[in-house]
Image (cartoon, rainbow, N blue to C red; front, side, top):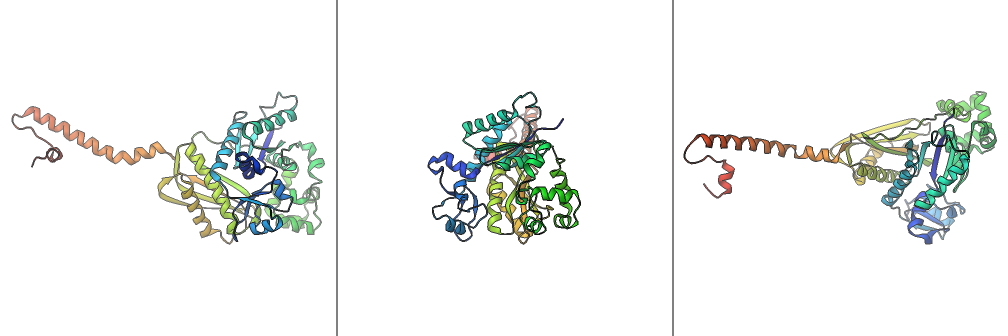
Length: 395
């Protein structure tokens, strides 16, 4: 029996968070980011997208396209709190969830829907209840694999619901432009178009016939794409452990880039998310690892270990940026992530910090017991510790 894998993607998440606390922003062109020469659009409302504004666009360019654009500085702490509410709501339905980023997750609903007669109605109910309880809007994709679920959530936005079974692949996916294929990067898509691969259906035909020019463009990743497009991709969900030894988060960028002003806000968002999760779990760590994926999907990792444990978003961000600046500044990347490792409970750290004081206390107690024992055996002036003599003002 095929699994029921679900991908839930919050629509224009940062913007929607701002709309929740300021409803006057609804139905207006809004962008989250910073104004200035180095400012970029983190995300934008659907109204702003009608003007051609999109994520990772320089903010000055966005303002040229849409002079009425309302630019709001990001509040990552608030976004992280809303992400937590989103995750908690889905967890009340199924424990089998995997956060893909601050605004999206995969979940295994196989057991949950096995007795549901109308699966589409059921997921519409989840979508509506999430909106009513949190104010968040989402698109939902349902399929037997992670890839098909992801393609389903991208198919209709906002507030879309798309179920893609294996028998639906040709009907739903094949007509889509190659740019819409998850896994085909911004640089690969134009190269594929130049050799006649205009749609996902064209790509499926080329991969199934092992076209050499297509294989050369996609490299080692071509075999995985071939599996995906034939409904054979992964259907596993990596759930969070009860007592995590690390807390991490990663995300795919809106476009392949090596621009620091685009990458830095993404690291800032990830650092805030990890910090909030660590604080909720009462965890601190002393190792930061960052991961970046290049345009060929190859992952590169660097880490740094420091003396003092932390869960501060500022510390996490500073260490992550130090690793990025020292190793990957010139690399064009398509995804990045941060992990806080070597976690311990905050109470464990308090115990470690006071252990030396505890040892001193034990030694003092042993000394006091010895003196008391001697005083019982002798007659005359009782023995005292030097510290007690000084404390009483005696010489």
